[in-house]
Image (tube, rainbow, N blue to C red):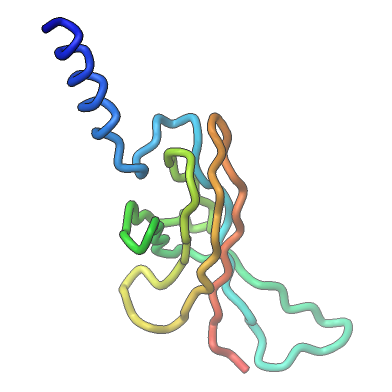
Length: 124
C-alpha cells in the first residue's frame, strides 16, 4: 500500500508541470526590435532597427504556454521549463501590423537561451 501511495505521488508530481512557468532557472531572454525605420536607406546614413515594446507569445506543440510584454527598451526575460518553443513578437494592441517573424528556441536546463526577435514595420 505504501509503495502505491509513493507511486501515485510521483505520477501526480510529474503531471503538474505544463512546460511553461519554469522554476526561474531556465527560459528565454533577449530583445525585440522593429525595422526598417527609414523608407529608403542610403549609404553613409545608417537607419538601424529600433527597440520595440511588444507582446511576446510563446507556444509549444501549437498551444500557447505564455504571453508577456517586452520592456520599452525591447528587453525581455521569460522563465520556462526546458524544451523547444516557438516565439513571436507583435503589437501589444493585437493588431495585424507590424508583424513579427516566429522563431524556434530550445531552452536548456539551468540556462536562459538568448533570442532576439524582430518585427517588420512595413516601411518600404
